[in-house]
Image (cartoon, rainbow, N blue to C red):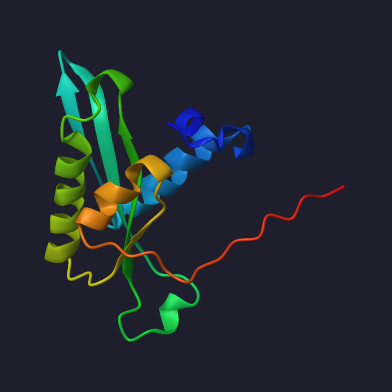
Length: 132
């Protein structure tokens, strides 16, 4: 998943332990869920839904928002509607939890898929500062 996103080089050495810890906390508080699709007892697709509350959104009237992450479909199973089905599941989960706003980070390949759900590009901008 991280290799496909081009972000693998940004991960800390202990990222697996941290993921387990952070996700465990979210699961305990019922603020996260993952959906998977299996083929022959092997996970071929997944998507995570997370309820977050951070700056500056914590000052909004609806302070919690949904975040879709960990979306991945095995290369051999792409273009079969699995990402769409999993995204539907996450949106349904958010809706049942009363979440009104959902955010995500989309790869170039997935932007059209998310636009088909009504996601819009926002005014958020990013600057990566490289140390010398």
